[in-house]
Image (cartoon, rainbow, N blue to C red; front, side, top):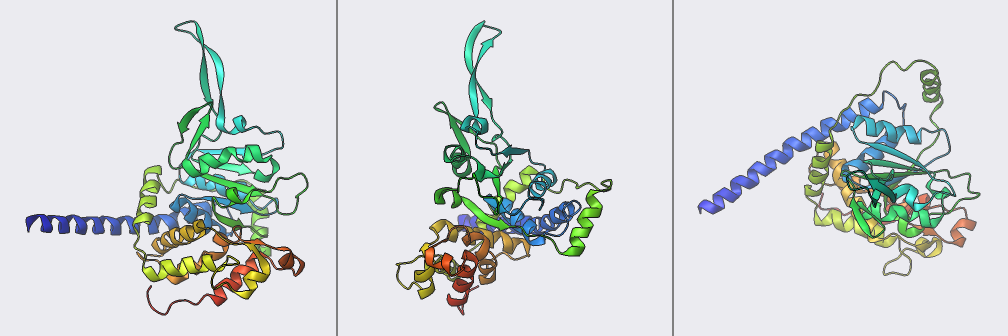
Length: 347
């Protein structure tokens, strides 16, 4: 009986701790967006997706034409979160060792013997920006795979752990495709979101022109510690998930796959390959983080629907018929959300 009461007391204390941490995460979410907003004009939806990716612990791909502040967004986020930032400019001659680091022959002054010493590459940071990732050959692109998935790198048979938290944000230019190497599906699948950046409205763009041609009057301040960010990531994992919401997320993902049970006609017509189970995982994890930032401790169907486009758009591969009809993955995701019914019960 005493042990039962003790367990109940521990559970109650954990719930209280989680409630306090959830409130802190909600307040921090607003504080981070406020501080980043001192340097980044508009782009609220973009900043929200980047911050959700950080709260979950996922990597994201930023897609947009030059001049949309992709690099500045990630660099400012790192500054506000007090994380070590590293930018790698991907070029055709970039080698894997330029990313991961390499072993060099160096003389030991105490023994006068020459020995191999590991020199870490720019991947050894908290936030790594892989700028124009599709400008380097697949062999070099693959150097990121282990780091993105396992948070470690292997050089000359030796494995080196990366410091937590660790994130990779990659950028691509969608209009200049000559001399580029498309990312393989296996690597695209490791990005939680594909974040689309577009030109700002006229008044916001005018604000950018004025603000960037004068003296910076207010710099972003640190709004979150590394320790708190790791605590938030663990909290996201503890958010309860109803059976109905989990099945809804999975149903959307499975409906994107052609030649499977219950596939919609438009999927058979337009889709060559659908999304993997990682899409459902990221819909749920992103939904959990989104719920917490809105003061809720449970995932709703709306959380899943709100993240469907950034989670699915790079995981669905359209076929020739879709391309000939001008159908892109945005339209496919729209149709999925329209045709997969939202359950009437559950969250």
